[in-house]
Amino acid sequence: MTADTGADARNGTNTGTNTGIGTNTSTSIGTGPRPTPAPPALIPALTARAKAAAHAHPHPHGPTALPPCTCVGATLADRQDATVVRHAGTVAKAHAPDTDPAALTLRVATAARLPDVLLPPLGPTPATLHDRPVTLWPYGLPVDPDDPDAAPWEAAATLLARLHRTPVPAGLPPMRGPAKAARALGRLQAALRSTPHAAPRAAALPVLGAWATLPAWARAEAPMPGPWALCHGDLHLGQLVRHPAPDGPWKLIDVDDLGAGVPAWDLARPAAWYACGLLPPDEWTRFLTAYRRAGGPAVPADGDPWPALDVPARALTVQTAALAVTKALAADRPLDEVEQAVVDACARMPSVPAQASRPPRPAPGFPG
Amino acid sequence: MQCPKCHAPMHTYNRNGVQIEQCSGCRGIFLDYGELEALTRLEAQWSQPAPPPPPAAPQAYPAAPPAPAWGAPQPGHGGHGGHGHYGHHRHKSFGHMLFSS
Image 1: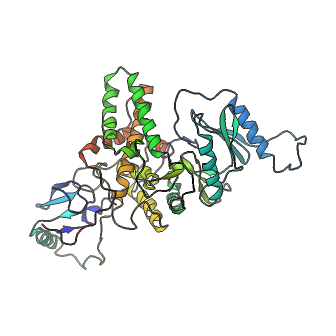
Image 2: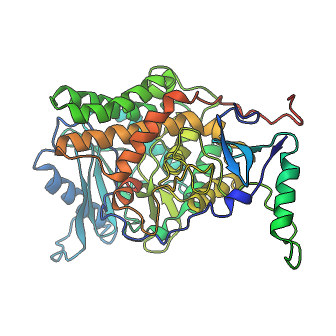
Image 3: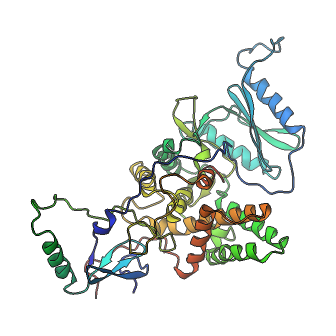
């Protein structure tokens, strides 16, 4: 007999008053390959593009002498793989240099067709600026990184469920989640090759070991198993904005990894955070419950979701650990407590067989 | 032993002198023959002068949602003393992680 009992769970929830979140305000468009820094002229050119777009609508009758502009402007992100600037209500994004322009066009078109789920672009086709594809978007208000209690878990889950229920547009390339995980491992391996010290190498071993136990599809070495759904591919709290700012409905942003694939991948970051003991159970429950209420197909409507989540959550845990160890190697510092928790989870993975993608139903009165 | 429900490993711990197996994955609990009665007896002794019976609708499932066996030990389960890393304050490094690819 298996008795589910709440006896031990009564002291099992730990609802912290979450404060002190970091100050990273990036719009976070992925972690790109290191070698190509953005050309210095890119940001001014991108800003000019955003400014022109921002002022296009009030002056629809062609070029006129504009008064000096006093609009709010800022560089929202400047990374190897994405540079994002804002001018008033317009945001211009220069995508990674290795972006496939045809695939990006399809992804942007998908956002244009799903304005209730994805922030719609200001134009249908990416432009080119300094050899980088550039897209224009309306400004949306991001989640406040200093107020984690305001994290819109229900909205995130509901948007994902709606995205996953949308038929996959014809010709859309695969979701890039596994490719991003593989790239993170590639960066770790490159960092290890240039590190003579033994200690960081030791921290990397559990990460490499866990990666080796993942199925080929989760390492981007084989096609993802079906049934495929329309997936975001890189969900985290930086991928949500309110539009119109400041109190419009939440929308998903960043279509660079959007595509057809295993929808559980989009749930796997919160799942991994919860599994690693970082995300409190109540926040994970809010996210998962809202996803199920909205009819999301990635997990069964009730029962244990982990048979569906297990492989993607392992992959995201390994990806997160790989990036953390890579960063620690570059800074020549030890892992912090949170990073260590993620590496520790990697270390436990090889001893626990991956769960089947079909949920095993408990047989009534199993043979003893 | 393996959990008959989710096949994760089960860990033995002692509760009021009764050996209990709890699944590290779904948190289900396995009781040997007579152990439920032993626990009930112990509980009755403990709460002898207790006034009314506990409220109906007992927790049908542990309050902590299921987690994979490779995850961190969850609070209040299995007697491993794990407590996760979310305490009274969210760790700054996790705050950064929430917003990073």
